[in-house]
Image (cartoon, rainbow, N blue to C red; front, side, top):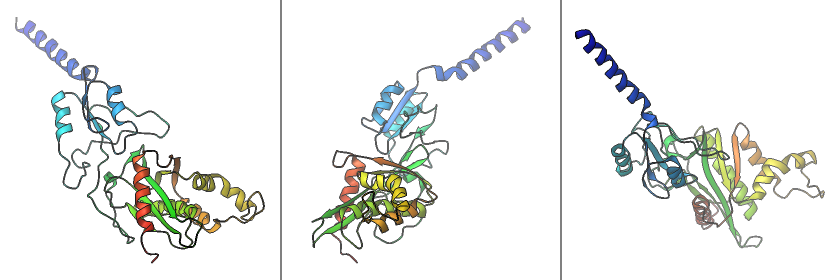
Length: 285
């Protein structure tokens, strides 16, 4: 009898262990704290619809509904950073040209906001890496340039760089030198890369609404250099110095240049545009 009880106990323990190991096959709960719609969802497809391509989305997968709702309802820390709440949390991989990956059990995407702060032209100390938004391993940034009365005597140009809601690196400043819209677009990208390098960021996804800037730095510049900085029509490249600075800054960087239509409701682009317009109002000093 004792032997039979021992066998029964071992069978029962094995069943419990199998049940625990097989938890991933049971119902899971997807908590969305920040997305198109916050809440708890029972399928990855429902969760993905709320967070895919949503700026600074926050979501996580749980084994129980109670844990999921606790994540949704938990207030942000005073600094806005959730990077220390669970050292095992990792950013869900979001590639620019790949589908959003489903987080594994207990893994989440936390792309927190920094304290509300405005940056001046002065340098900023090292910023916590958890305050940035990511696509895979690359940090996401939006840049824009603007110029009122473009091409006229009283032209005023500004550059804007947007890293996320309330991010300490967000900046809007007056463009130094010649005041044109194209120069503002180029130098907005320059500023973003300068800031990234200062934070030891090597991989960037840089959004801009300027195809001129993207084509110039990724395609045209090689031909210009071969032609002695002349266009295919034999004319001097108007923005030679500006593109030379931008190309130099890209050295040692892994940059994905992404075009976003201007004034089309993309939050990052709208914010970069707002910062650029604020910068244009400043004095040239």
